Length: 349
Image (cartoon, rainbow, N blue to C red):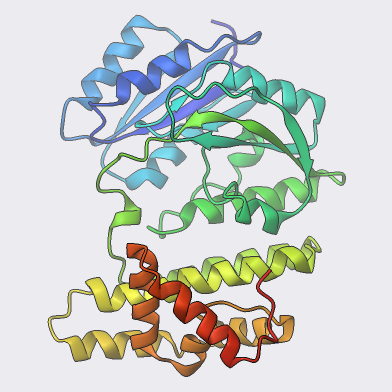
């Protein structure tokens, strides 16, 4: 078999229900250049490993790595180290590529050799939107458009990606760190580096999945996300992202953090409410949060969580977060109340 141009890396763990759909979406891709698929069985305790071997037996483009449970980052790193293609794409075992996805990504890359090619995703398995590309220069805008933080909607040059493996110390936000590391390396090697966005959803994201990291409580949430956001903000300022993008980015960061504070009150395993409250108040004393609020004051950037976080009112933060989570009109009422308390001087855009 000739050397593949593109390799799709799939971490596999307890994926029996969706693995066939995932792999079929890869091997059925119609491309002008050869492709390969690496399945990394990350110590699956079910029959997923045998399913991987069955795919390798029936299709020579599929290879399998079996390893002890090292987590999704460790599985991706194993596949990354084994890839010998020019490009790689990551795909989760419960997701799928839509027909023509790999060729569309390769065509966009050939058209703009020094760009990072990214694409939209869909939660509708039968989505058939046409593939079109547009240039994008703003890193902050990529975050705001929900295109930055995930690793599986981008085409990577293998030789660069292998230099910035996933940090296995993180169990939250590690994907964003990998993407930022890759962008930093790509920017240093390509002076006219830019982004190319494919507006068609090339990846089907199965949002029906159960037990994902986003549904779990993370005790270090309010410690880890400031590290990620500090890195993201530094990269955005270095890229000279416009203020009209930085304001909503900072607003989004405050929302993520405040909802993490609320989650301490909601799901922290401490039995006593007073202990959970003390943990939440401690998170509100974060130097990073103080710096963010000061930056938002200078930018005149309003958020419903702005005053509650300044006041360190865990009760208000929890009330807002619960209202937003349940779709209660109370969120809008408290949002506008805070805005008018500030005299309407801050910007809502």
